[in-house]
Image: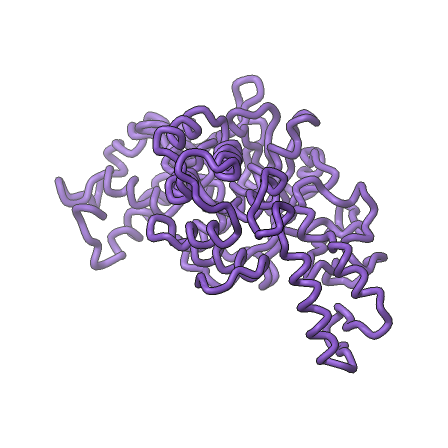
Length: 427
């Protein structure tokens, strides 16, 4: 921490153990101890207040000026155990009760929820609770904070494995469900706002999971978006169907479709990016030729040289932008560009606008007048495409160079764009 270093974590383990023992004693019906201030909020709503922590029965291990309550709460915030709701009040999702699986189903509101799939068979310990702490914390940098949704002045659905969120600036709510092998995210809002809200929710969930993985030290279990398998969607047998090289597959191999593009329209959710499942016409023509390489793993084309030449030709044509022939971009490319930049937070978007050549006053005004992170991103990219202020170049190359600038340093996003759109000599 800024003014103290813990060389022995045992003091922290002792402190947490003290809280556990303290709460178990309070739950013991005989004899009934005097509950501390804030006990009801802690027991029912997992809220920890400063008054609750000040109780004399929870005061050992502190050392004046060296290890105080402020140190403890700061540390637990950074570890995503606590989410600071307001000064002196924190939320601790790991002490919430579980909701039985059969009782979860009535809360599901989306016919095609966002499924968060984990490659190693499920999320690692603590990921769900830490994600809840991240999206609820006022300390995170997301410009559109979430809160626990209330109904009649009480939480509408507040469990460790099923929780409803009110997303600021939007009507409706989001629902996070921990299925233990995957997560489900549902959204309920007006039809006119559905796509916008889904884009925000998807961005918030995956940027939150990235922060959680960094905090907990999980670097080899990167989540990815998936859908519920349309072939088996009963209450007891739902499982993810995921996308690999624009093919649709599932662990039980029970699908009736060869590709995601062949799914029925009602099975394709609005949160799914079109580029993740829809092939361009040039690639489809190549796939229909009798001698072209199959997309399925393990099958090879008989003439590798011809494959390389054909693929290079297709890439060259598909990578050309919809703007002028000199490779520059136009306003018609706005959605495609912003889809590549969904992982940027508000600070990154601010710096991106400056590096691309927009005036400082303009970027500040756009930030202050944007209701969400997505709206801010759209506005910055649009003014760049319109060549406002000091913008000199509008192209994928210019965007890649900006992402590599020292003010951003987003090498991963830059590399992805460079590979997708054929940008060379920048990395």
